[in-house]
Amino acid sequence: MKPKETQKRGRPVVHTERWSKVTVVMLDRHVAYLDRLAVDIRVRHSKAISRAEMIRALVEAAFASDVDLKRAGQLDRKIPFLYSQTPEEVENVARAVLRKNRIQTSVDLPSIRDGFSAKLVGYSNADVEAVILMANDDAAREGTADVDAGRFTRAAADYFPSRDVERLAVFEAASRRLLPPKDAGVTPVDEGLRIRHAQRTSNRGRCPPR
Image (cartoon, rainbow, N blue to C red; front, top):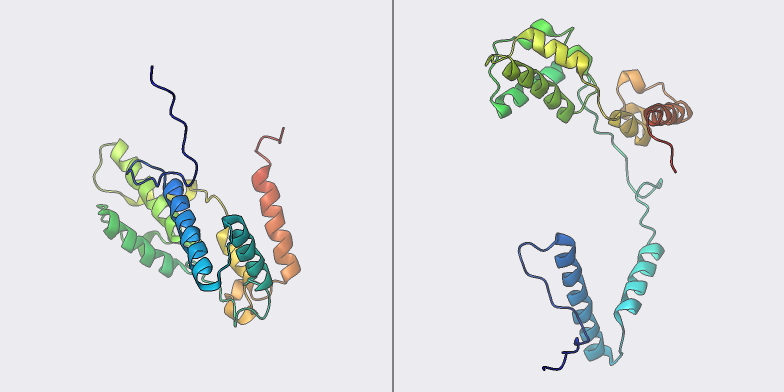
């Protein structure tokens, strides 16, 4: 009977399999980097240092460097990158989405502006794409290749975005001059109350914590 082999101590085997989780591979690379750094410190300064000591030193250096980029003075100016602010801009995004997904339609988007693009002002480009794909899926279920105007307007009325990302961009802006006219008169207090109200409203349907 063979004696049971004892597990060797030391660094674990580096995972190079394609099926391995990315986190495992990245952790192995980080550990290998720390080992190389420890060897370099030992050679240059004749000092032995452990991985834990190096991690602690890196964390303390990050705290000491004051990396809070959102604090006033850390950046020259916080510029909000807002989504489409006019129906015309929404239509430009919609045309690009139609070309990207090769969706067949004969609809002239300005002709349905009131029921389509005007409803999507302030929505992200991904939201506009989701609306168009909803209309295309509706047509596919009915066996129609061409997406008509009614499907676009119904999808725009039916779609509900997951969250109002634009409000966060307005809240973080550094100057009123960088905001669109509809938001230039909003105070930081009003904007904070609006965001908190939206958060409470979105959490009403969730299950309470146990």
